[in-house]
Length: 294
Image (cartoon, rainbow, N blue to C red; front, side, top):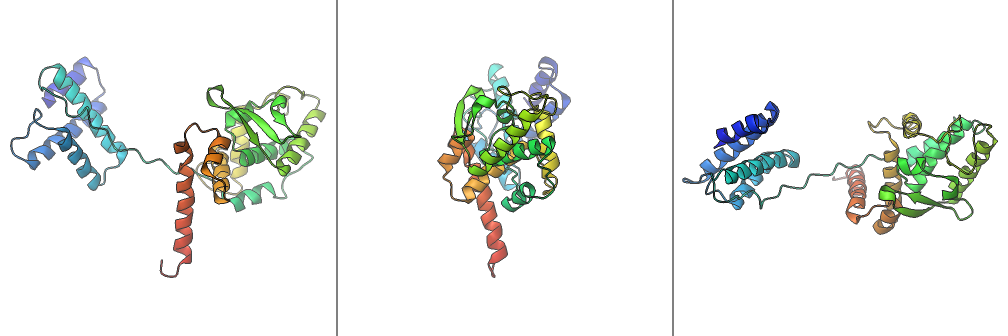
């Protein structure tokens, strides 16, 4: 049955050799498992509980969720094929779902490092280039915007007297994000300097480059990466890291999860909950460093 299925993949589905090898390994792994479990078990008599037991044994052997889901996918495909060809009477795999993949913890910059970057003496506050860069970084860190949201800001979206931004997020959903006195001061400074530039115009894009064009995604990425490199050696030094840094700082300083969800524009609280794992990891490190018997 395995050979028939592999021939089907190779000649009818035109699957890659790598896929065929991966699927064969998964199917032979399950076959070896059920043959060692109990005499008389076959592909036809295997049930969903047996498949779950097999997955559990894979976990105990150190396989991660991604690997197990890949093997289960092979089993799903195999049983669909066998059912279609009349080789089995039922499909025990269709009722089995794989383990949830672990979410990678987001990278974030420590509060002290952000203070060092933003308050450092190297900024030339008479230079349009420096003021633009610092304002962009400060806005990411103090408002938690996505890169596309920042790039898309127009003058009409930035209400300085009310200290709030009208942000257009994913699927054109809009939200209002408040900000503080420091950011208001820096946004006013930037806007004033921008309007003094001959090439820049008011009433359109809020953030404009030295030629008066709306800043691009790539330019914003370069600004953030180059400046974060001054205070961190993390592999990821992107605008999204500043969004993570905003959320983590808010949570560490007492903000509720639902409030952070609204500020970030997350549809589901589950998406926001990853930041609780970040702060808990911090807590564990503090405990390990501080407790004498840890």
